Length: 236
Image 1: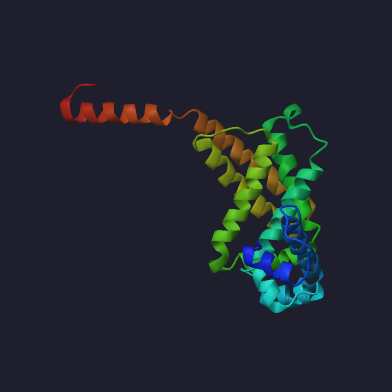
Image 2 (image 1 turned 30 degrees about the vertical axis):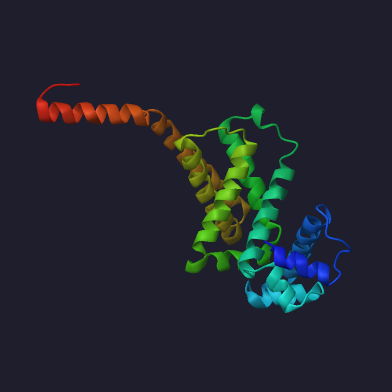
């Protein structure tokens, strides 16, 4: 989130004594997390907006100008920091679970539950961030963050797909994560669990159906053969 200009200004203001390869990233990352920590209890009252970023930065001793350098995209950067924090917390919660010992269905369930609970722990702040990300102008960021979360879960689950399955799996799981979190907030954990089980069932059915489809090369070959029969009355 932070920029080289932010790092340079931080050095000029004496936020760290010397600009070294070790201290520069540490300062930027630590300060971003401090601003996020300050923002979470303020979000229910202020909403997720530029005012929140400014107030949180001030609480950390940063000026408005310094906050703009550290988080150039303001509340968008703050929302990304929050989402990635929840990704890390979910993976930390899954540390003691061996995905190789579980069926794919259970891996998905465990991963989604961990990610949803990591977000739910920040309560109203997450509601505000979610409403902010739901605005049309923030849709690209919301999709990108949901994709990141889905990718983190699939990687934990041991997925190594590099073909079209890589993308379809993450797109499906991103939608499941988003909808399950919404149900968790609106109707509670039991309803979220039921919703999740139903969505996983849909995914497994889709994967089974997709597995029966011809591979892209085979599909192209069949299409060519069909066109050949139509045009020439023979198969090539």
